[in-house]
Image (cartoon, rainbow, N blue to C red; front, top):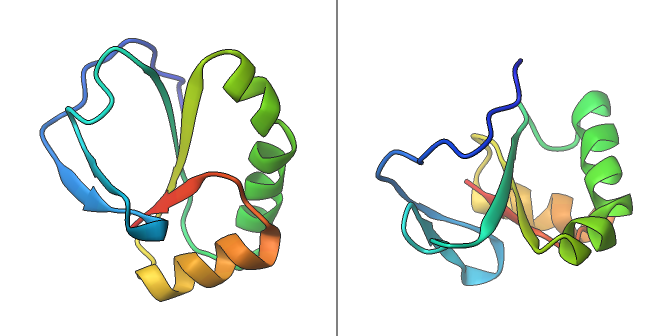
Length: 92
């Protein structure tokens, strides 16, 4: 999959962990990293989430906000986030 930079987001509204609501306009003017993954608690997705977790301070230092996105429900996301000690929110 190609990395896309500076592409406007389509209009959307979604719930994220910790009661955060994310929209296409909620982060205007800020750098946002959205990474998409198929499913919480699978080997490949866990490895990917851990890589974002381990590099989180570098993203913050660069002024970026990180969000993980999958089709899982909020309960699954909250459990996954807690289990892996992720510092960023997961969007359902």
